[in-house]
Image (tube, rainbow, N blue to C red; front, side, top):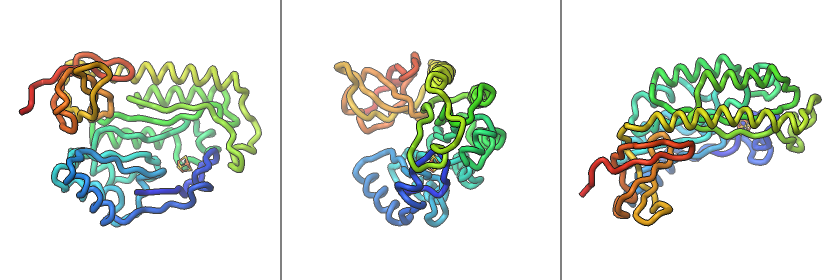
Length: 285
Ligand code: SF4
């Protein structure tokens, strides 16, 4: 529903390959969503390279409010967001709309202001942390996910430590982390201070160890809770079902195929890094 990007992060090809930001009109999206809901779809994910820059009438918050009124559409997600476009209205929508799922992919890329500036990210580590605070005040159970680049040109040990510190302060439920790699034609590819590959490897391993630990802890903390799970397909083992929690975790339970497409309460028994295991809280008719 949104394509392209005007942000020009210095490492990224999207503004060149996909062009400037473009948004589908609200009515077209609503018509498609109504049609999907009438066919039994319970969850939709609004996609865009910079989805929260959605420029249809009322912005992404306005669209979410309209989508939330569609009968049968119980879950709304959106991805991927830029911190600079996470406005107060969208944050307020997270507090207002139970349909807006409590999982937010909000890339930060780095925790050092020097590197964020060189990346042209248009935010600082501190402004990102304050933003996360605001979002959590609106929706206290929100699970945060992030994107990280290690070994951006000019990244020194202290800059990388600042990334680890930011990760510790936020506490992520999920993340995507990469070694910086030069994309021809992007400003960062021509920057001095390119980081040696073995240094990037070592930093990525340290970052991933921390992110994995946070993800495992977040999933383990769900044990004992009853979560609504939208079942999507049969699981890998006979008699097993696989679905998603509100926090986008994969959930596996034993249960009948007729529950596929339904949102059903599940008592979570255990959480590992990649998924949750549970039992059906009650059989639905
Ligand atoms: S990283 Fe995201 S926000 Fe930055 S230029 Fe690429 S698509 Fe745009």
